Image (cartoon, rainbow, N blue to C red; front, top):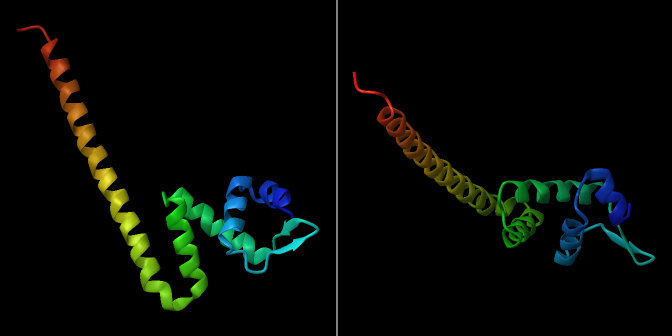
Length: 119
C-alpha cells in the first residue's frame, strides 16, 4: 500500500510515515514506481512508533528505540531502560501536578473561608 493509503487506512499522519521512511527502518518496504509500498510488518512498526510518540518520546528517542527493536532481543534491557525513564518522568510530572492541585485547593479554601461572615 502507498503512503497515502497507509495514512488513511491506519490514521497515521503522512509526516510520521515520511519520518519513518527517512530513518531507513522500513525493512520490507519497497519503492515501486517512485512510491513506497508498506507491508503488514511496516504497519506494526508504525503502530509502535505512534505509541511511542503518544507516550511522549521525542523523534530522536523513537528512532533510537526502533533501531534497538529491529536489532532484536539482545537490546531488550536498553529498551526497558528507555521505557522506565519515560515512566519515571511521567510520574514526576503527575506528582508535580498533584502538588499544584493541592496548592490551588488551599488557595480556594482560604478564599472561601475569608468571605464567610463572622458569627
